[in-house]
Amino acid sequence: MVLIGPSAGTTTSSYSPVSRASGVTSSKVTGALLVRMAPTITSPPTRIASPFFFSLVTYYAWGVFKQSWTSDSHSLSEIQMPLIIPQGLWVAGLGFFVMVCVLLLTRGLTAFLAGDLDRLFALIGSKSAVAEAQEEVINVEKAFAQQREQERKP
Image 1: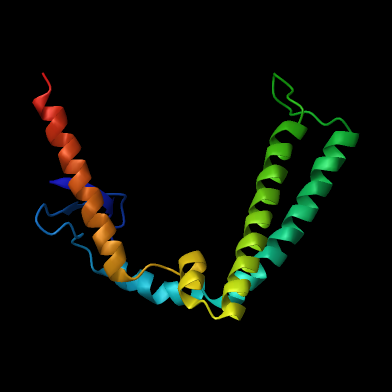
Image 2: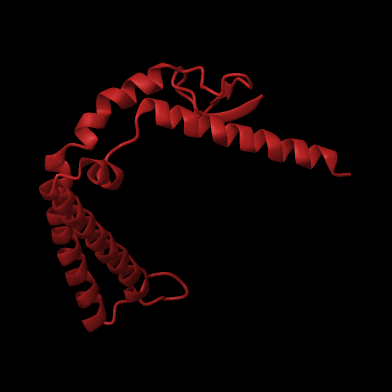
């Protein structure tokens, strides 16, 4: 038996067993919750608003970074590390995220306007439950194959 994913039936961080034959988790509650949440997480207004929201967050993060740079701020620890190092990584990560959001939004709108719905769903669509289950079965089979290989080695 392999342990994959958190069990939805408990409040602790335990894991639910996966059957060797089926490769499907025993918890149906988690799947039902994800199906209910998926439309709100992946709705078009959310995807369109994300680049704008995170560009504002990045703008204000840049202001924090710039202020730390000009005032030569350091941490209050023993090493007194300049704050521009973690804040620079933070701003760079946010900037990269905004660029990816804008790129996906642009490519998605281009595919939508061209009428290429297959490309649109491949870019920004979510997988179907069947595709998710098939991918999970393949991953479990690979894990079992690796485990068998490890057991054969002396």
